[in-house]
Length: 360
Image (cartoon, rainbow, N blue to C red; front, side, top):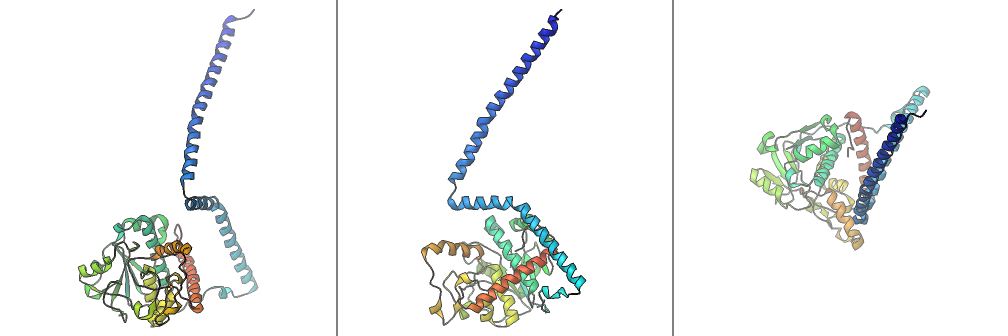
């Protein structure tokens, strides 16, 4: 005998299941247009980007996709070097030749100050450029024959935030004085000399009892004369590097913070301004010695103009001291060796102070 109550219950249950399934299908149908719309919007945004922006986006995506691969390669390299060292130790081979011979450094009493009080005048992208320039100054000072007393003043705002986010190891930097106070609150007013290309005074010699201030500003010449005006407002001495006495160039007469810093380090070692300038100045500046103006680079074709301006923008600051590309092969070789040495110092610093991101 058939139990009608059980049959009705079963039929009711099946009906409810079908209804629930229909609801789920309906919800899925409702979601699909939304997802498709999002994909259409993303596709539209991609199409609206310029060719250069799409290439940059693609490079960033590829960089992120290859992150694990790069990490694995670094690990394999490290293991390979470790095995090589072990094999050399077993064979009794002296592996010291692999290390760069470090010259005996004689610290200088001269003080170099990067004034970071212009933070509010810069966009974030320019603050990031300033950060890289400061990293370069730090690395070059660490490997210099006569390292100076390095001061970073008015440290805060966007610069500190960027350093915290991309290079937390800066808190472990050695042989540097990082202060949140303004340099005028830390150093004697009588010892200060602000380096600015707008000054009518031309620097002939460096006095080790002085503290030379470099304006930490990357502004692409938007705030002309601001460092000179600041020196006058503070009532402190000011001067410009003697570039005009030794250098002729065909580009903008502005140098980055790290260029001024490195020129002073080079002068302390060589005691010759001309040699210091041409050891440090980047090729794109087109610098030639005074009296050799006929050899100034003439490659100013329209198709390279945008690229040249971009290169200048990446490192120019209001510190303003001038020059242009060198045609001498030996100077180019020196520049290449200097860049290679900088990379070595950066790696050494990364071992000394653990950090995230890249140390320039």
